[in-house]
Length: 64
Image 1 (tube, rainbow, N blue to C red):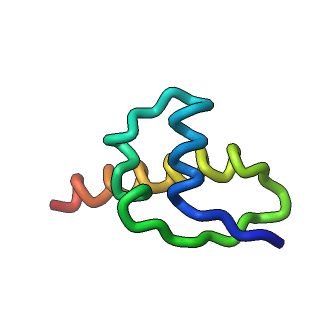
Image 2: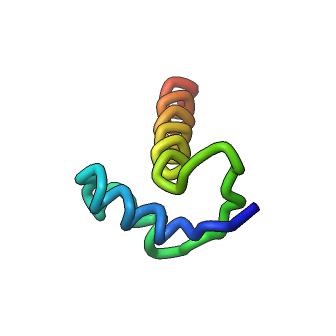
């Protein structure tokens, strides 16, 4: 079991997926550690985490 930092995940998404740094600014500004699941690569985990965050924001906007 390993840990990864959100700023490292953000930079991976910028370099590998072409995401904009501005989209991930909050990951870069205040990094937090995540436990990396054994069944996911770091890149897969970054993608999954970003998708979950986007899903949460969509739900919150609908509830407002």
